[in-house]
Each structure stands twice: as structure tokens, then as C-alpha cells.
Amino acid sequence: MNPVPLSLLPDSASVQADGSLAIGGCDLSELAAQYGTPLFVYDEAHLRARCAETVAAFGPGRAYYATKAFLCTAMARLAYEEGMHLDVASGGEMYVALRAGVPANAVALHGNNKTVAELRMAITEGVRHIVVDSFDELDRLDALHAEGLPAPKVLARITPGVHAHTHEFIATGQDDSKFGFNLGNGDAHRAVDRMRRSPSVQLDGVHCHIGSNVFEASNFAKAAEVMAGFAIPLDLPELVLGGGLGVPYVEGEEAPSITQWGNVLLDACQALGVRSNVSVEPGRSIVAGAAVTLYTVGTVKHIPGVRTYVSVDGGMSDNPRPVLYGSGYEAFLPRAVTAPRPARARLVGKHCESGDVLIFDAGLPDGVAVGDLLATPVTGAYGHSMASNYNKLTRPPVVFVGNGAARLVVRRETFEDLVQCDVG
Ligand code: LLP
Image 1 (cartoon, rainbow, N blue to C red):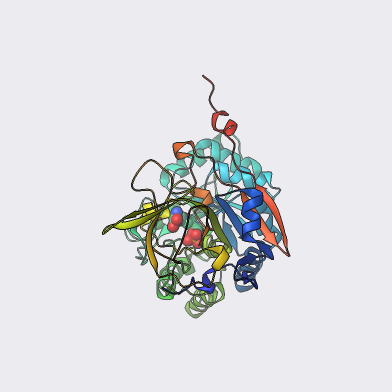
Image 2 (cartoon, helix red, strand yellow; image 1 turned 90 degrees about the vertical axis):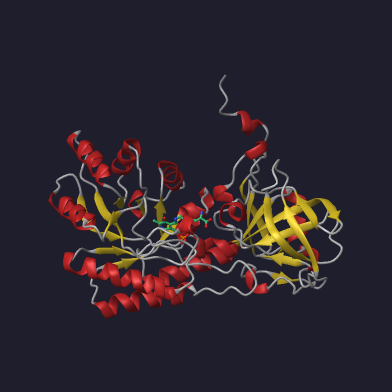
């Protein structure tokens, strides 16, 4: 029933005299007219503010942006310009970061199953750290060293046995996990012993990541405590406590700010006597709230006694999170941002399956009609980065807005792009 909470909108969102929404001084309907829909609109000042907040909270060189949340050349540059290092989780993410001009010594490579080619690329380029995830990866690093490659600086990824309160698909700190060396069964100690003795790697520290979209500060404090207990006797220079800070997606949700998160982690480490550099690698909390997705309503179908379906021109290909994790979103009309939303509808996309749902039970203003521009806020993380070409939809463009100007940073895919890789 309530209007969309303005707290879910990007920092520079403002309601204009006619009740419509501008972000970064740009009118959303004008952006839609210029770039088409679906369209990701990011508030550049919001992105920069979250990067700067993280660097201020943890210190220069101790804040990595987890690029998996949203990566393109402009985003890699922006995070680096704001003083962040970059966490990449594949050769492809590493390539985009380096290609954007981010120096390799500001990049850390993650992954539970890094290929020999990815490891070779990381070593040859000279990344800051490889975060080693398994004994098999250590075997691969031994083989690369035997080929004559230098021994890279590494961190050991530890699975601390901490259950984060989040969706099971994105919880990673518990014993039953594909990630890292388990603390509980002795693997973590065995891995660290091997790395300390190994001529193929230089062990610089330890790392953990308990999960994503975590709202409870106590989960992070617990992970810090467990990791401090493991790390202090090792006396290594680096302790990385991962990302994972949650963000509010819908009315009524609340999450700690980055500054509060920093205080929880750093206070816990200090109280426990950690002397290593403490770093983090947030993704979602940097980018999620910075963006809204704009869609055009294409059909409105009333089924008396059942429900109303409102279909937009995107769907699970630009935001698979509702289908994957049951994640909630809000929707509103940019032309009437403060309008109450008494109508109920299922907001769906244009894909050929019933599971293509953006909001299962959306509150919308009365009178939503074909041709309306509709927006979903908090789509800046794991939307564009998880976008697909299902049904051969072309992936949406991305614009950065600020100070009344918009710049296109990712263009819309074309039909021609859809056959670029076809060779037969
Ligand atoms: N570090 C590591 C080792 C990670 O695995 C992740 C996320 C992060 C940092 C960044 O976490 P964040 O601050 O963004 O929570 N697709 C899912 C999220 C998957 C997160 C995977 N790892 C979603 O849409 O919710």
C-alpha cells in the first residue's frame, strides 16, 4: 500500500516537482527514451561513496571490491580510482579488470576450481594474491613452479565452520561447503603447513568468506573470532574476512552500514589481539542500492478471482535472483514515485516459462497500464552480472548518471552479437 521507500533508492534520487523520479539529476523517463528498456541506471556518486566508505573504514589497500557483483570496464576503473583493490573470481573477471587498466598488484584471484590457465595468467600478470582453495590447486601451483614460473603470494581460504543466516545457495562458511580448507577437520592446518614449507608459493595470510547477503553483525563477529583464533598463532601479515554484508531490498529490511560492519569486524579483531592487516571484499553492499532497472510494461492480464499479471520487457534474464533465491523486490512507477501502491499483481518477464517472475506479489499504484515505465530498485548487484541471453534476449545496457548527465558504459547487445560466437 505504501509508496516505494525512498531509502531503497540510490543516494542521488530526487522527486521532481511533478512527482517523477530523477537519479543523478537525470529524469528516468528521458533516460528510457534515449537508451530504451530494459535499462540499468547506476548512480555514480552512490557507487563512489560506498567505495570511499569502505576504504575509510578499513584503510587504503584493505578494501577489495568483489567484481562478481557487477563488473564492466567503467566499474573496475571507478572502484580502483576510489582506492579499492579488486577481487576477481575467474580468468574472465581478471581479464576485464586488467583490461580496464587496474594494475595486477591491485587484484586478487579467487575460485574453488581455478584452471591451470587461470593460475598461469595470475602468476604471469603478477596479481597481488591468489586465494588458494584446495590441495588440488596446490598441486597445480607446484606444477607451474616446476615449469619455471615464480612462486606467487597466496592466501589460504579457510572454511571456518560458521553458519551465516542467509539463503543456503549463498552460505559458504559452514563445514558442508565446496569452498576452502575446513578448519574443523584439520585440513586448514594441513594446508597452511604445506604452504609454509612449499617453495611454489609464498604464504601471506588467511582468508574466509562466510556467505552473502548476511544481515546479522553477530555472524561476522563470530567469523572474526574463529579466524582470529586460527590466524594469531600463524603470525602472518594478512587476514581477509571476505564480503557478505547484506542490503535492504524491500520495505522493512535493515542492514548494518559498511561503516558499522567495519566497526564490528575491526573491534572484534582488535579485542582478540589480531596484529595482521585486516581486509574485506564486499560486492553487494557497494553496488546493489546504486542501481534501478527500468522496464516498459507490455501487457496487463486480469484473471478474475485469481490474480493480475503485469509483464515487462525483461525478466529472469536480467534479474534471475527472484527465481534462484526467492529474493524480494519492490516496484514503482518513475512518473509517480510517491504514489501509494494499493494494487496487487505478479510482475513477470517475457521469457517462455511460468517461472519467469520478478516479483511474486507486487504492490503497484492503481492504473498501471501498457506503455508505463516501471522500475525495480536495488538491482545493482548480481543482476547485470548474472544476466543471460535466455530466449536470445539481448542483455540490457548500463548507464552511469551524475550531475545531470548520463554516460553509457555498457551498450545494449544487438542481434548480431547473438551470433558472434557461432562458427558453423
Ligand atoms: N568474497 C568471496 C570469496 C565471495 O565468494 C563473495 C561472494 C564475495 C566476496 C562478495 O560477497 P558480497 O559482499 O557480494 O555478499 N549471486 C548471489 C550472491 C553470490 C555471492 C558469491 N560470493 C546473489 O545474487 O545473491
